Image 1 (tube, rainbow, N blue to C red):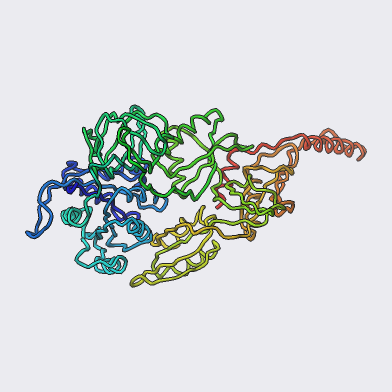
Image 2 (cartoon, rainbow, N blue to C red):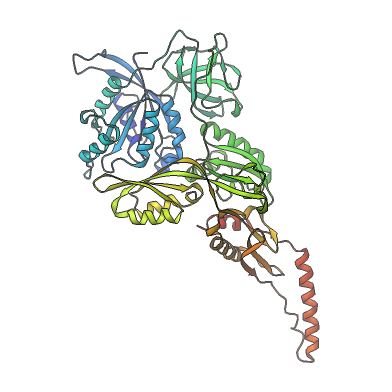
Amino acid sequence: MKEIRNFCIIAHIDHGKSTLADRLLETTQTIKATHGQMLDDMDLEQERGITIKSHAIQMEYNYEPTDAASSFAAGKYILNLIDTPGHVDFSYEVSRSIAACEGALLVVDATQGVQAQTISNLYMAIDNDLEIIPVINKCDMPNAMPDEVEDEIIELIGCGREEIIRASGKTGQGVADILKAVVERIPAPKGDEQAPLQALIFDSVFNPFRGIIAYFKIVNGSIRSGEQVKFINTGKEYKADEIGVLKMDLSPRKELRCGDVGYIVSGIKTATEVKVGDTITTVENPCPNAIDGFEEVKPMVFAGVYPIETEDFENLRASLEKLQLNDASLTFTPESSVALGFGFRCGFLGLLHMEIIQERLDREFNMDVITTVPNVSYMVYDKHGEVKEVHNPAGMPDQTLIDHIDEPYIHATVITKTDYIGNIMTLCLGKRGELLKQDYISGNRVEIQYAMPLGEIVIDFYDKLKSISKGYASFDYHPMGFRPSKLVKMDILLNGEPVDALSTLTHFDNAETFGRRMCEKLKELLPRQQFDIAIQAAIGAKIIARETVKQVRKDVLAKCYGGDVSRKRKLLEKQKKGKKRMKQIGNVQVPQKAFLAVLKLD
């Protein structure tokens, strides 16, 4: 155990985590030569240049102490590295990786300095008592400012200047120093090899040939191939058909001991039987209690996901279950809608997360899906004092029964250059934000903190923030509970009939403009019928906007070429009665593209 080091790499988006991980793998000769990010093996990751999943890999490093007084013996050390995502939507991946480590490399870009997600991930690591090794990456860039960035890091974590390593993932500068620091500064895993087996599952993947492969870290005890094991939370027992360590491929071993990070294949077929955060123990000598796993994931954004063909409903369920194995932050429950049929109400951590899930459903499972307007969950208090959690406007009680509605608020942190403060404040105030505090970090960089409703940032806040700050502002948020708010349910009526898939929850002040825009958009998209279609936006019984799609008419006067006016009137009256009768029995079909266009109103 003294020769094992478990560590992860944490940083903001695009600060060079995956490139640095490649250099570490090359230097320890785990792989010969790299072609781009080796650990980002998903097509989507390579196309977008972002890390979506955290990736674990084992390296062997020959350590030679430079200082004769070093307390560490020379020789071979086993380093388990976990490369983590940097985007705020995948912070759950980061929290799970941190639970499996004793130390972390905090990577900061020498050209950009400390950014919002750096601080957020750092606090997560400090809460778990991890040893932090600060690294300044991209020191070879012509516009690097390592001295200023060093000052920022010292202010942030209070370390000595000599503890900060200057490196470059591109040229390999400083990589040897990082490996030495990992051995010397990060503590070896603590645990008892003689105790009963206790291993924490921190990830799992689905393999179509071998079933579900769970990744775990052994906290106490050891595990041998062929042993009978038990998953404590689900209570199921399995045979450990194969165990091993994670190299570039799975590398089987006969035995894994305390402190090791590895995988287990036991022929599990059902996705619900493996829960991330569960504890593995042996059937012969079980451990008395489970490891305190990490906290349950809290979805931020909810949207309905429906198959385009109704008969694909069961396939969609199977696809979502397999995706959930690989991405534990996805949650889903079945629901149905009058307009779209059967589907699922899915919970995501953010809009990018929702987009990635949609893309993965299409690529990995060939599932074409329709996604409804993303929204957040609200707490509705009725006049009897009862509380109901509502994810979907269709589930709202009648307006007359509601006492008040609470909506979720977030604590948002924006770090930006001073040039863009005015524009960013205008944007946040427009989204009903309240300024909490403003700190100047260093030079011309400022940190602004806001309390904002989550519902306001769900759609387009991040894109607008990036465009008004020319890409310089960084953004991070965490939930801060619920607050009462003046929210109303807005229905869209077609000829007096409400369309449930188009109803939304919106703030009272924005309702009128939003309703008007929605009606105008639907007027363009609804096909004309033989009768007038009235499109109305309503709050309760009050109509706040209206548009009319004019009817298609036959010219019944074409055969009249003169004669008395009463002949024309008789034909027009007859047509008018027919139109009236048609309107009573006619149905308005809302085309699919109308639902999708309303989602893109912003």
